[in-house]
Every structure is written in structure tokens, then in C-alpha cells.
Picture (cartoon, rainbow, N blue to C red):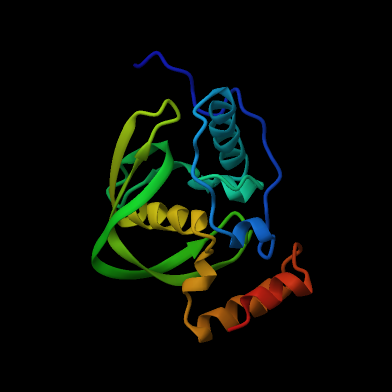
Length: 188
């Protein structure tokens, strides 16, 4: 066993930004300060992701417009991938295009069939400024693409066909967190 702390154990759970919150629809800023504030943000992201039972979480989903995300996600072979990426760049998304159910902690309780590539490669940095390259396939590739989209100001609903967006909007109207502004954001 490795002697290292469990991610998120020193973090605090933050409030989740929900669909139509402007921070979710604005491209995030590049991280330039790799100090203690960034380490705290990464810990808070892990704590919030675990509390919400997610597999990935971008900083703008907790109201912070910086290019950072965390993940604890299996691939299709059930291999666990755990980490974080600062200033990520999706450098490759290729292979077979796979449609599958996709959800989001910022659209709680909803999901829709979303097409993603079966392979993704993301490059960036650790919270200490060290270079990192992460490659994923299957479900983990979906997660990497989903989180990179968040940092560009996109949610998975932005990638849906008009028919699927309409179905998602109808489901959103019934959600406890729904408001007219949030549902309007989903209209095709």
C-alpha cells in the first residue's frame, strides 16, 4: 500500500453550480498561481465530487472559473483512474464514436444519450506544476472529454441532438432544482 493521503479528506464540500449558472457557460481562465490556494481547491473538488457521488468534477461546477478538474473514474475494464489536471488540453479524442448515457452533477438526476469518442488524451499539469499526460478509453475517455468541455463553458446538453435536448428539457422541468431559466438553457 502507498502511504499518501486520500484525496478530498482535507477538503470541504462546496455548493454545486447548476445549469444556467453563468460560470458553467463561460470558458475558464488558465491557472497561473500554483500555491496553497490551488492545492486547497483540488482537495475541495475531490471532497465535493465524492459527496455528490460523481466520477469527475470541474472547478467551474463549484463556481470557480479556473481550468482544473478532478476524477475518480473507472474505464470499461473496471480499472480505476484517480487524479487531477490543471490547465488541461484535450490533445486527442479519437477512435470509435460511442453513444451512451451521460449525466452531470450540475444537472442532477438527469442523463441523456451523448456521443463521445472511445479514446481521449489530456495533457496538463499537476497542482505542483509538474507536467502530466492522461490517456483514457471507454467510460474514462467519456469522463475526460466531459470535464474538458466544462472548462470550455460547455455542458453535455450542448452536444445533444435537438430531439434529445427536447427530451432532456422535459425531464428538467420535473426536477426539484428546475427553474424556467435553467429549462430555457436546454431548448434546442
